[in-house]
Image 1: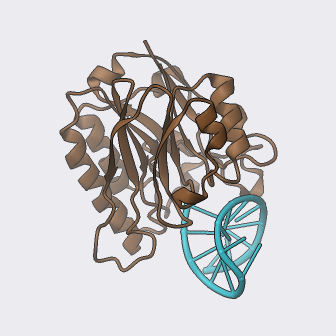
Image 2: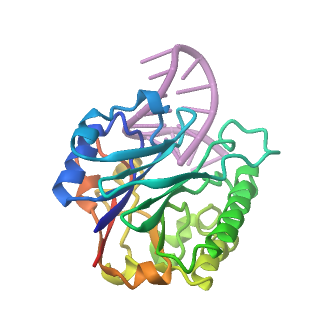
Image 3: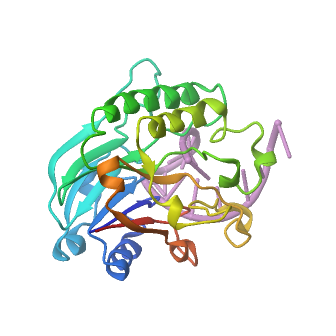
Length: 258
DNA sequence: ATGGTGGTCAAACCA
């Protein structure tokens, strides 16, 4: 079984790329983030005729998470839809959708963007991660994958120039500690062992030819529970998907299970 | 400190 995650930065504007990606890599389950549409706006006919079922949660033009599966999709659950108190048009959205696909629990995650250190969104991000971790502890003994855009670069080598991020989110100790918490609980970054070397990125900003210069960040991850991780035989980042006209700013991340 | 590009939806906000 082959599972992928991709921050697609608008599903409608990239539906052709999504369909080609699924076909090119023979994907069974695809977790999407930043779908940027209400469910009724989504162009699903081609995907349905290709045999994919769909679970979606998105209430505005921003964000939105989805799961596509051609190996079944059961017990769909929307996670963390609302954390009151921020009075923010973005925060009330659901940022996680989970389903059991082919016997594996997959959570498509869009971890909040903290914007600036100490911005209310930054604190919201940390709080959201703490709540996710609490829930994820309960899933550790089942085959579970927490996949998606974590908006955290866990190591210095996960950004193109750590000095350039001195005052930025994504690399602060509290964010990294939040990410490490999942590892401490037993989740495993199942892709990194298959992508050796520093500066192996999943995201490159659209500006200033960051992709062409490989000035990127590694912020998209597949964290597997032990019973998931032990089934992973391969993983890779589809860097080619970031190239050319009409690319998302994120590349898909793919894992193979036995 | 700002601005660079791209998406949504047609001004301003988000990444």
